[in-house]
Length: 427
Image 1 (cartoon, helix red, strand yellow):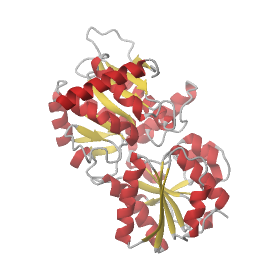
Image 2 (cartoon, one colour):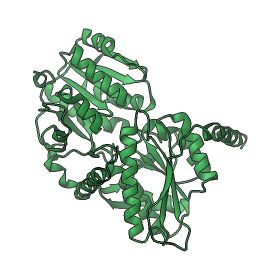
Image 3 (cartoon, rainbow, N blue to C red):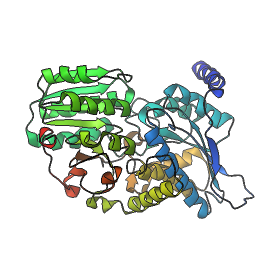
Image 4 (cartoon, helix red, strand yellow):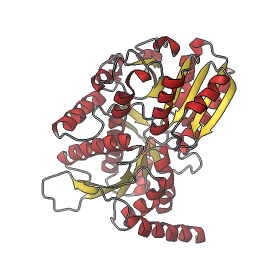
């Protein structure tokens, strides 16, 4: 109890410190219809500025589209939905104060996470202390140490996410018959969790790790790291990085080159429209994880395609300064609040225990297909895909909205291309 009180005091101090600096992004009411009942408030932080803004901004717009949709249907429990959110600036230090304010001052009824592992982690103690259901948006193994029974997250990496996330990448490169590997990872929670799973998969394949390097997320020049990796002559290079590091490593590859047969794996940010257009042909040959790309076989998520079209039309019509394509996060951001909403209406109350029990025991029909949660609130099976950037000719964003620039290597049942060596696509 003493520790809980101490944590609460610390969090309130953080509220005071952040009150003047955290930018209030606003709250929205997505209905024009007057309501007699108070709205149900869903609170969250979101990376609207900083390194993860490319993902956070598209996530917020997807959540707003969901709020509009659910309010047109009558809301939750006969009450309209109001999203209450603050910009966490992609800074984990801002997150505890934001969630304490959401719960204690804004009096939100429900909470969900912001985007990304590093921003989910500092919110977990708050959700646990307040015993609230906590829906996570693309968290990598955040609950492995907490084992909190009211946490559920939408990243489709399977019941053992750290391993499942990179499993298909290793299966894809196995055809190149590698014997050695270099592993490069950001010194941050997401990347380190990913690296742990990648090392496990490498060892399963019998690969010798000839180079292993963590880097400071503030690293600007990656050429020394890449040259050091190349000196060990690895057959493949696995990279676990956040957007700034991903862009820096792609540029370093363009400058230094490599004889490795495959490069990529866990590079966050290469799915963002701004980075794809900015890096253009420098992406050719990189094989990387993804979740939704405009390939014809992705019609296994029929609701996602329609949602993305609505998102893209809204971005264009309203001239919004957010990710223009939205393939990476829009379907999943819509789905995780939709699951929470489905659970609230099914339970018929805001009882956190009842909502958590319902989510744990139910298979949900969503825009990303059926979703069932398993151990630690992770998906009961992986749906990560592996793509390879091919045939990128220039920096025109429109080419990434068409099939062919991110061909699916695995899973085999939705494959649209064959993995080629990194060097073959750089000529």
